[in-house]
Image 1 (cartoon, rainbow, N blue to C red):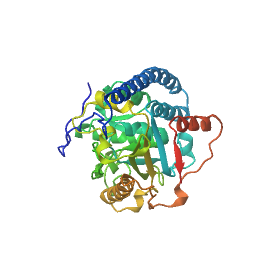
Image 2: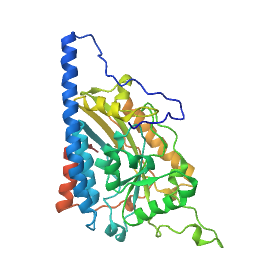
Image 3: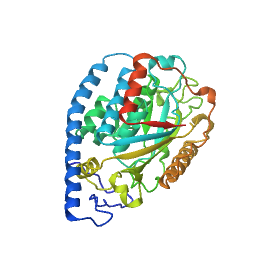
Length: 357
């Protein structure tokens, strides 16, 4: 069974049992419990059926040049959201396009999406709405289901060991140069969902590369961006704010939050028994790393946007897109047509994804 280590903050796993909010007759409680268990079993059966089917098709698309593999990965995540009863509400507009080599040739800058992190479910939500690949710790590669989808979805696995830092940094930069966008969780761990942990500035190193001074060996920075092609940063606030159609209160956050030493199996089982839930995602305006004096300043600006948006959503407010710091002319715009448009709509439709600009 997969479990999480206790976080540095000393959080302990909350109880996973749902528990009634008000007294009910015993037969009603038994009926509700049985109904939830049947629902959960059917959903897990759907996941077991969908994952091998979709991953097999994705493996074929890896051999096809272009962006179909990126778009199909979004469909995989979107269907999983549907199977788990997750709806997505999006506030704001996504910076960047699906990308690909042709996008870089057109001069479209890559985008690094920066989000808060409270659960493994975040990957499903963000994977549905963002055309990108994730950067995740190496342990996830060994997980059942999620590990398989992550590998076939071209996730970049990192060990966080000093001896491999340079190689992993170069791989991430290479991916963006070749057309990918990235998703990072700069908190470095997941939280209980009640706040956003401080961002580690080291996560922003690939966005703001050090400048080589005169006489320095270029081999110190073997991979870099073309002039004007450094990535943009888009801060994202993600909060689970509805359960069974009602606003999510503090006592119900453990339904979604996965942190500390919580086990994955029981957490998944209690989640799939709920009939309906919703996550709201705020896509804040992007930040241009070139307009910030240091990585720490960039990390702080991203944290301010993410934390403020998340706090607003936790208070059951609609959510506000916070202004960024960038040149609007730098944002890529291209009209999606044909099969690409169909794939984009399928993923959003399965996740009941609704945009509110």
